[in-house]
Image (cartoon, rainbow, N blue to C red; front, side):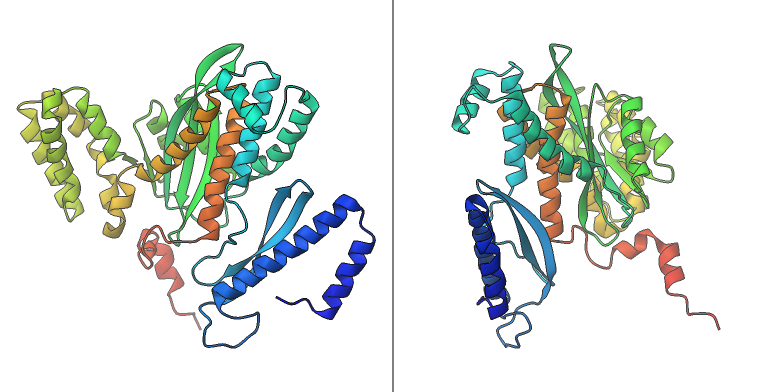
Amino acid sequence: MALSQSDLLRLMESLRSADGIELIRTLAQRILQELIEAEATARIGAEPGERTEARTTWRNGHRDKTLTTQAGDLELAIPKVRTGSFFPSLLVRRRRIDQALYAVIMEAYVLGVSTRSVDDLVKALGADTGISKSEVSRICADLDEQLTAFRTRPLGHTRFPYIYLDATYCKARVNHQIVSRAVVVATGITEDGGREVLGVMVGDSETEVFWAEFLRHLRERGLTGVRLVIGDHHSGLVKAIRKVMLGAAYQRCRVHFLRNTFAIIPKDAAEMVAATIRTIFAQPTQAAVRAQLDTVADMLGKQFPKVKAMLLEAQDDLTAYAGFPERHWKKIQSTNPLERINREIKRRTDVVQVFPNDDALLRLVTAVLFEMHDEWIAFPRRYLPEGSMDQIYPAEHARDELPPTA
């Protein structure tokens, strides 16, 4: 994209007054911005305002992105498009995660709790043993400001009919001891079928008090419209949902339920039992789903009475999904949508192995989630089909379609 004469004059004026590093930063920022705009033009098939038959979509504003370089932070603007997605090939994804990982490793090193692998990573990142505590504090403070803003951002911009809850476990030092810490994550599906990361918290255990605190935090930030909470049968989770998420049903993850049954049956019977239980979730209507559960419970009960007891006890929670639009069933029967997130969290946290404290663990996990959230927003793709979400709030939808009164 060629610069206009007025743009060139402004650029020349800014360069005259800039010192060495600032001159490099200004030039780098301008060059990168022009290259980004040129790539966007090639992707769209037209300059801004240009009429052309080669156009594939239209520009739809910009979103800000900060790129950290050795010359300083570069403030760039990434063009948004109305259809499809655009992300410049010049920029590297997950930059924020790399910063968080760097900060955690430095903090571990300074606090004297680094392992051999952490020590090797410190050297690979180009740092030496002379890094100061003040430098680590500065790095962490810069990250924490934006990560805290993400964790505490308001959620009242839309309704979230479905939310997913799950926990994974990492090692951290607490009171000079290495202990297992629960990292709980919540994601949600918006009323237009998109996805967002809602929250994350690190704590001692998965007690009712811990889960209730987490859910109340989501409520206080404006979480509304929840109709179904999908989660595993964690200790305290169900009680917390009943108390805090009033008006929402609870769907017990079918995948985790199957794993629970494997613990009480012989290994050679696992495949048969799993196949039989899966027939429950293959039924076409809510009534058929519940009837099939009773049938399966009776069938398996002759040989595995404990499995029958588990099925009957979990009947309402296992079949809660059937009260929602049939087009959503496969996506709301389990916490599988969180599995990829948990794998990415573990991939990143395994690098550190043992975190120096809860803050360091929360910092890195939040960075991972922030980058995923950014991808979902920057590259919007409906997680649930268009036109199917109206069925979740029928009363509101019907009211919106009423003709105006005279």
